Length: 311
Image 1: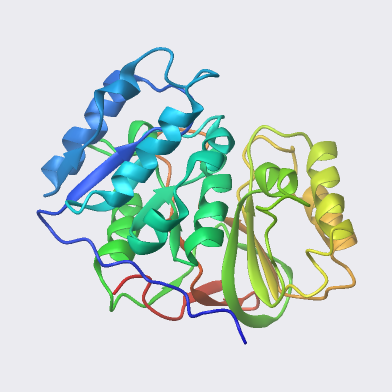
Image 2: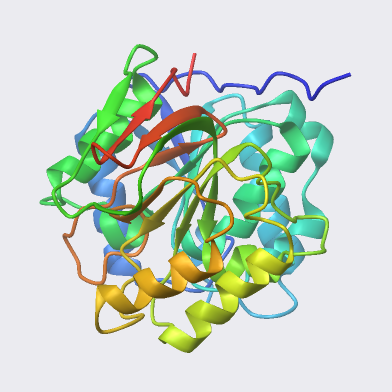
């Protein structure tokens, strides 16, 4: 039997409640409150637990509390979507405490990126549901935020009919071609770290998205070699790279490495997609629906989302 059809969460409507969890490292409280104000301003109720303000919240010994908080948000019938306060580090420690039955029985919109990647991978493994690689509350959601960031986020999680063809002037084709597959991926360092663990990503017949920040060229090369050695490029249908902020000085360097590592794959490769780390406040961060079929067209520099991410 094949893998069961992916579960799509219910769309978010104006007046619905967004639950905020903090599975990763500590965050700026003022920025967090500004994010909450913005979510309320655009028409949503917000729920979070004040325990996340505890200075010990993200330290060792509180992993169970952070994990069970996620369970409570999934179980809460009032909460229709779950956003993350911040990324950073520590999300992996919450995974042993996730309640698989609760999550499977209550699929919801879940948004995050960077360190949250490992949590997104596990939620897909647990419930086979669409999850969203997108902004976190205390960094990118605030009054005066990038309006396109907001539009792409709300378009995906609020509008079942929002089929989108995405193209951006900074996109570069590293390898020509066109391909369709289920979109998977996230932060490269987290994906590499998950190889040969229960959270190992499956890239067979998929479109793989990768992004990272603050890693030098040698580290990025080692990540790509690790992915190659683990067979992640063997049956992949296409590759999309984020902007790879502060990872190298010149694009030709990363292009040469990517072409070298994925040479035998000969799949379409796009570089520079504005999703993930931006490097500066206010820059564009496009939400991506992981688990949805997309078409990458490296000749025309487009990515098409082929069906709704919510129902």
